[in-house]
Image (cartoon, rainbow, N blue to C red; front, side, top):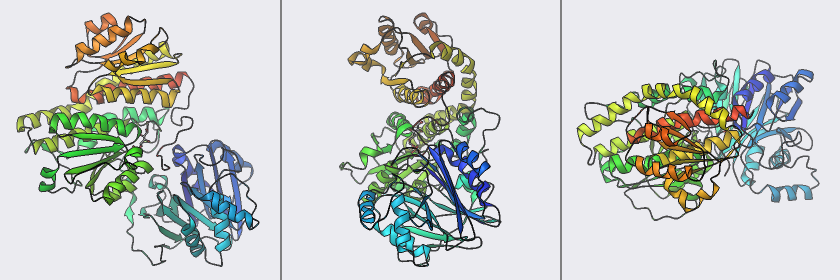
Length: 610
Ligand code: F6R
């Protein structure tokens, strides 16, 4: 949510900043801005709207200079206007600030500043920071930033420049990620290492409450007491992996990421399936055999799509490991005070590793002394670094705001985790080996499943004008129904509800009419007949039915209006397989409606505010 990039070095800063913002734009796209410096002159350029508006401005009013900071915004305080776009300046225009996060006590700080005669030029919470830093500035920007952040309640990732210190960038972090990038032509500050690919060779991660200063040749990180902190520079390639961070030949990141799923699943499993012991292994789980045996309950906590993966995980752990699992929205878990005994492990599930609520939930669990693990995609993210142990997805960067490959990879990792726990309990070696074989076949199964795309396109054309849509499934496919509905609503703005199919009768069936299609997830399995009865109930009320079903299923074909056959797999893998047509359906409907698939309105990737 919001992106920051700063540069100081021997090259012109503006093109580097704009290129970095392009890579970060999926994190927020209400407005964008930058400030560069030539000697002690600062050049501010900012515009409401997409980054392209800033680029147009720069074409007529270039911003010269070899250092600068920039920002792409997801509005929290104040609408998407030029005046609210970052950077924000102090009243005397000596200090410029870009900020990710929320200053919770900004109103109180603003009132104090106004009482001292400071005139505000925006509605943002960030502007108080610029004025406060200017207030404390006495020739040392780093010190002024440190004094300012002491007053602040809330979260921040900050980048600051001062016209009296040309070439110097100061950064600070609390709850919003910030990294230093080290390159041949200079040094960088960014909210996300992925913005630095191709520019920096090494990255250094800041921890909460640390501040940093960099110029073209040097960098330093300090703690609150201004002591120098030892920090390690990591090879950036290690964090970004081998995935192509561009769109390639695809029109949208979302489509590219949908089609990357066979490879992402193979990567999630690579080196982790162990035929000798018929189990799975994870390098970073950091659980001793005793801890593993002593664990008799798991609480999974996550948000959005990752929460849906957690719900799939609940079924998986019950079936494969016979372990009780609770799945809780991280935003709820962090403020609850549930009784948790020592044998419970907390498992945070997150693509970005930066979701504010998930991070806070995990920290709360850690504070209470519980073993807190994470399933995470973004290497080096806050959650990945703070968890006691965990499993990376290795799905590569997910840029499309709607999560696709992360979801299916999370389900695959949860399957392997359930296998791992199961094999320390009742699951026999032959049963474990069967799971391994079925998992190994999955990437190819997904390749076959993707062949449904043309069929899905036809169905999308037929239903593109719908205003409401229901997604129905049972057992493993109930969370897949929730996820299908989320995909449709977030990128096509069509109202969609996911339900456990049998729950329909308890209220939502009142919504059914000839203009409200129901997408049934009904491949062959234990509850097939039950779901068929639910389908009949919808048909009896005139509701159109789209069925995601087993190949050549005459029984389903007899009732449903439209069929999307998918390959047969064991039930515990059905959420992964059935999600593919649902992702494609949401994508195609969004395209037909002219929606911006990769940057849906009001949303942003990685929700780093509460
Ligand atoms: C929906 C989507 C979101 C995220 C949620 C959690 O397509 O992407 O619902 O799943 O914001 O994000 P992570 O997984 O990064 O913690």
